[in-house]
Length: 82
Image (cartoon, rainbow, N blue to C red; front, top):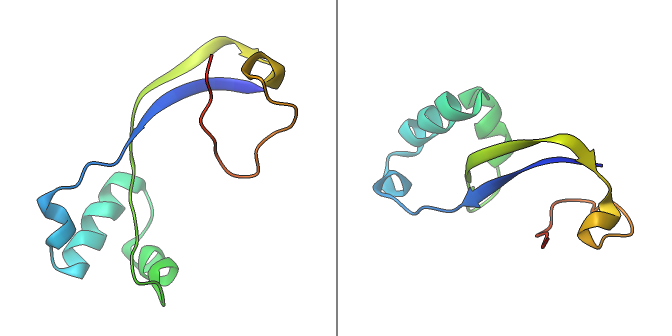
């Protein structure tokens, strides 16, 4: 069941060009994930992305997937049209 929605935005900013450790500190402060865990996750990857989530809305009543034209739950995330 779908319990809410939110706005997802990628906002390029000057923080993309900060020192790697300073950037991990910023990501940690806004994500509740330790800098060490972020670095562990990032290990061996060329790029790591952070997405800004805003306008979070919880529905008064959960909606069925069929209300959004879905037959089964997506395995990751997907765009929904209503």
